[in-house]
Amino acid sequence: MLKNMEKLNNYINKSIEQFDHISDERKRILKKLSNEIKNSILEKSIVNLTFIYTHNSRRSHLSQLWAQTAACFYKIDNISCFSGGTEITAFDVRAVSAIKRAGFDVIKTENTKNPIYLIYHLSKKASEHYSKIFNEGPNPQKSFIAIMTCGEADKKCPIAFGYSKKFIIKYSDPKNFDGTEKEANAYDDINRMISREQLFVFYNVNKQNLHL
Image (tube, rainbow, N blue to C red; front, side, top):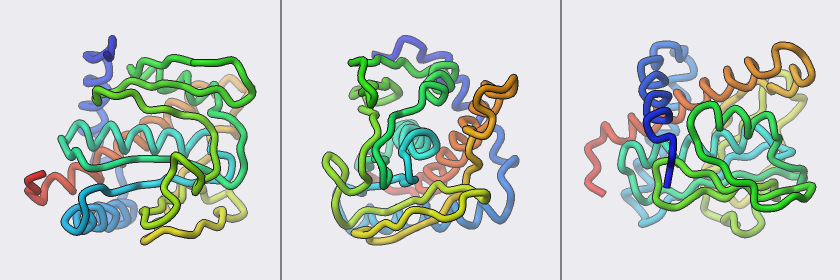
């Protein structure tokens, strides 16, 4: 059960109010993703989205969490969201702190180099987050929509395969501010940006008047 429901709802509503902060260019990309999700919903019972970047430590986790939260917020029930990388590291503690500040309840289940976090949002079931390879269980191995979260400064996005469709939605890496006085703000800024863009995606899926 989410303890900070009011705080999270306030955060979500503020992100929705900021849809005009999204550039026209990014809106075009996000609407293409919305249309792909809508078409996939009409074709199959469950739609799998996998957010991918090399280390599966920051942007891919935030995107997974906000996509699942946005789907719940707009009552689109047959969406399953995942994240993964090409290397196993850990869900970065700075990103975890940012989602706590947004209002999510987070439980760390073990103290290992790659701990498992249970994150409670609007769903009755917690999301399980830890660093993993993008196409290894519990992630789908095929027929998923791949969303690459690499940024402009990244030399290349990781190579993925098995997907039915791929989108590149670039986010700057807050890691660049680790250990500086701007660290918390950098993580809060990217968390806010991802939240409003994933809410925008599912707002546009919801606009299709799908009866799910």
